[in-house]
Image (cartoon, rainbow, N blue to C red; front, side, top):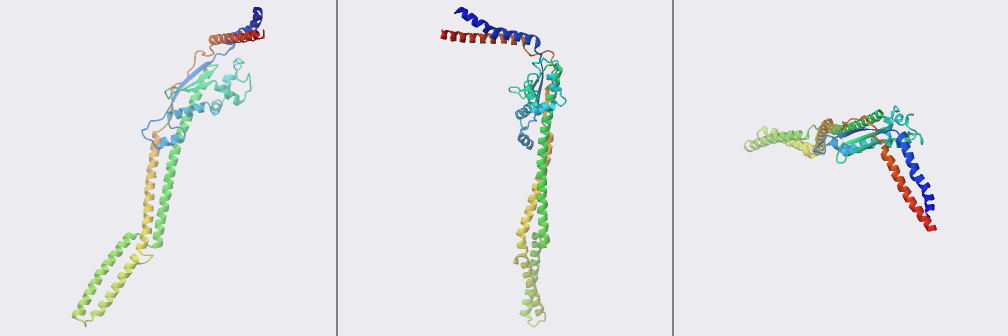
Length: 365
């Protein structure tokens, strides 16, 4: 039984412990490339406001209203294919991981394809963007096999993040002003249309201001009534005291003419569809439309001025807290730790497999 176990354990220990440990010694001790990590820290600043301004609403609609949302936008962008493509326009990022001086096992493309999608998956392990717990500071970490290349790639990521923040902020501001300008244009068109309708009504009706013309008409009627009363009084006096006076026919004609004139003036005010009273309702409706449109235009212009002032005050920007560092020593790989980890895992695997094989042998016996 013991001899059988020895024959079983020795090859198993060789496969699970000795060979993996030797491979780890050779790889981590001699062949594995040094990995340098360049770090930078940034924060997106959004000016604080106590009220929900129009710009804040516009920023919210673009997903850029709060610091957390701003950070999420920056993180998503830096981890996207577009960020890698824009940063790799001159091939620097690709060259950093495909150089001939890089060990073939660590080099991109040595164990697989060299497509852009495969490089994106490869570089995803080299770029880390994290947000601090309880803070708005983001840490950008870039791993590369050369310290200067790691720093330059990190610098490009920061620059691209700043460009993104400025672009989103500018877009939000321009959208806000564009909306406000659109409201001004719409209000101006409405005011112009209302004024044209009022002018058209005046042209077709021949009435400039029904209220003023009505007041003038009432004054005329009042004056004619005074003249009528005076003429009637004079006529009655003559008929009473001098019935044969030659002025009586003249006064009678004058009274009749005054009564007819008063009737015509009253008819012009209230007696027909074309009278001032009939036109007053339509005129007042048009006048109210003009006043309302002018008030809307004034409010829209004030809103445009406020939007422009708010856009100048509320400018989101990326603040660099810590510039991309130039690492002076390789942080990875952790060679001794990796070797001992390989040894520990090998021993664990050897122990488990040994117990399983012993159980199987005993079950067969």
